[in-house]
Structures are given as structure tokens and as C-alpha cells.
Image 1: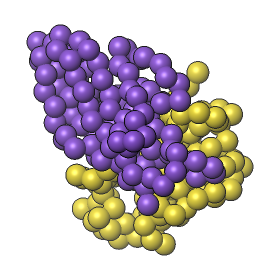
Image 2: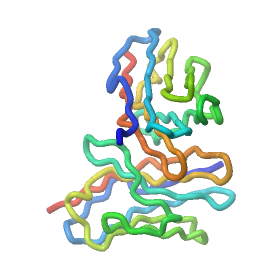
Image 3: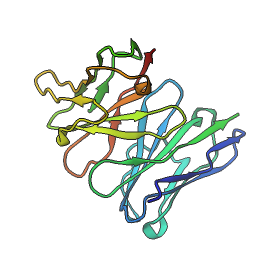
Image 4: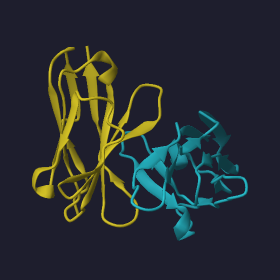
Length: 111
Length: 110
């Protein structure tokens, strides 16, 4: 069974540019989560989808971040425009019942 | 507010020695506690969850509600246990988000 996949694995962009991260959850998992770890800090929750609906987006830092999950399958997280403090590793996770399974993460560097 | 504290950023032990990675939490209610592990160049993976009460790779963790702790223990550390360990908490009800500690980097020396 394929695990959670994320694309790209690395992204380097300049301040002010737009970046879109993609997450493909484990097939059949209704719950999809985005987390972020910035340098020196803990992994922090961003938002939670149940199928295509946003269940909890309390962790989204500001309105430069937009997450979508059209059709309830894969999800995208767009940062527009990117700022220096957005640099970090963005993790996606999915679950059905029980523990969450994490993807390998996307390392975003904003210069 | 829910919070997870892992007081040790780094922990170094010798192979065969006991190891204990500390985790304390604060949550108004009965949370679900997890340990996640990230080996070098691998993804974050679930190691233990307290409701399972199981031992994985020789590790155990007991939820102590009185001390609000969920320490991870192994009686005899192995070199392959070297990794980053994260304690995480999930609230009850529909709040599925995980709250993580900052992690402890465990190094097991030969």
C-alpha cells in the first residue's frame, strides 16, 4: 500500500512568489491534515480536512495560505505571496481511524 | 490550551543502557497520547499510542494522569534506536489535530 506522498520534496522560491504544495493521502482516508515545522520550533498543526470539507483551520497563520481538497482526494496548500518566515518543512498526514500517517514533507525555502 | 513538553533536546546513551525520553503534557480533559519517531532520512512514523498499551521495538510508554506524563522507555537501547522522537497529544471529541513537543534527538553510542 502506498503511503502519503508529497510533492515537491524541496522548493526554493523568492519572497513574493507563489508556491503550491501537493499532498496525496493514503487511498480511502477521509481525514487529511497539514502541519508545519519552522526552524527550531515544534511541528504545528495548520488545518484538517474531512473529505473535501475544512473541519478545522485554526492553525493557518494568515490569509496568504490557502488549502483545498477538491473531490476529497488530494490536497494543495498554496502560499501567496511567500514571506521569509514561511520557510520550513510542511507535512501532510492522513488517517481513517486511529493514528495519523505522515508524508515525507516538503522543505520550503523562501529567499 | 493543550501543550506538550519534552524537556530534553538531546539524549545520548550507550548501547545496552536503559533509556527514558520524557514527555509532559497539559490538557483540560483526558487526551490521547502518542510517540512518533523519525529515523534519519525517513518520514515521521507512529511508534506508540497510549490506548494500545503495546510494546513496539522494545519501547513502552505509560500514561500517568496524576503527573501528566507519558515517558517513553526502553530497558536496553540499540544503535538503531538513534532517531528523533516526538511526543504528541490529541484532544477528545472532534478535535483531531495533534499537538507536538519539540522532540528529543536520541543518540545510542556503540
